[in-house]
Image 1 (cartoon, rainbow, N blue to C red):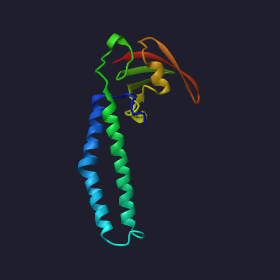
Image 2: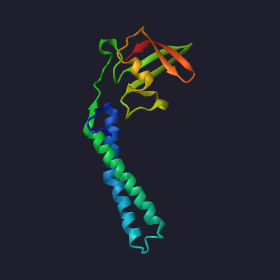
Image 3: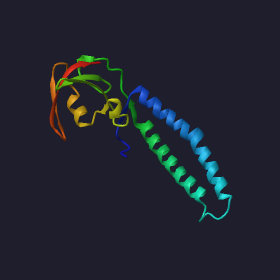
Image 4: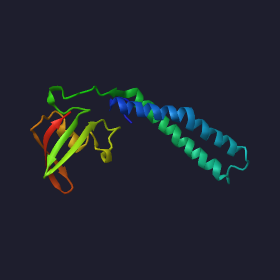
Length: 156
């Protein structure tokens, strides 16, 4: 992970990551550490499946803690953009129209992107072409099925 890169998050996204970090530090890591200690006290570590499993889980948790510390250190909170200049910016919710279909997306930083919940990264193909656009403009995105043209019908 690039330690100088800004990581854009909404207030909600930052709160979720802080909550996860606090839970890992305050609850999960101490619980797993206790399991490692208990399993170590059982004797032969070479054939102790509980010890191996708990050590692997501890390694995963420590890695995630390290990752979250970098993210939280580099986080830049996306301002409440409520249609500033009526342009798409990070944090904007955009209503698009394509082929008789209306779709609504929120443009977020890459760490918050969740396409199943209609949150797209500003670095995704659609996110990139939407940034800076206004209501009434059309954008085109290359997709596996071919080019898709979207009309921007609303920005919040």
